[in-house]
Amino acid sequence: MRQKEATLTGQELEIMKIVWDLEQATVRDVYEKLLEQRKIAYTTVMTLMNILETKGHLKKSSAERAFVYRPSKPKHQVIGGMVREFVNRVFNGSAEPLLLHLVEDEVLSEKELADLVRLARKKP
Image 1 (cartoon, one colour):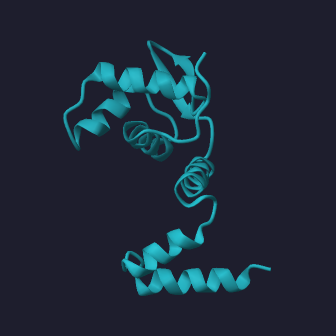
Image 2 (image 1 turned 90 degrees about the vertical axis):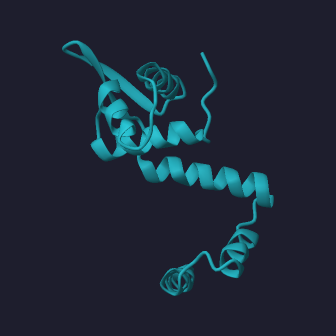
Image 3 (image 1 turned 135 degrees about the vertical axis):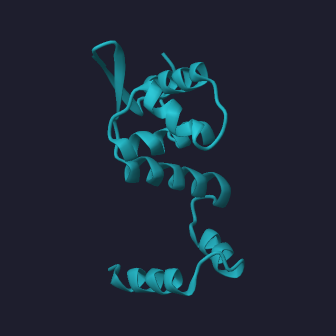
């Protein structure tokens, strides 16, 4: 069995976003949603969803003739883990350089920046 990993690949995250939005989905459901955006093989979606189950991000149950997949973890928990891992790997555990980068490159809107300042002031 593969080791559970916090960080998802781009395709895995794309699939997880669909399953989080739908709350439960078959491979066909995810495949059809992805086809709205780009070409992808059904077998690729099936393989990726099996990998996500192996990693512990999806749970599957049998329903009629297809497996139904549900997220095993809430979106905020998975995304939070990915952000923590990114900050640890890229910025040696300090979020300050990341925030400085976002501010200096004007990635954050004035409203987002004001919201961050407000949140920072609330912290004990």
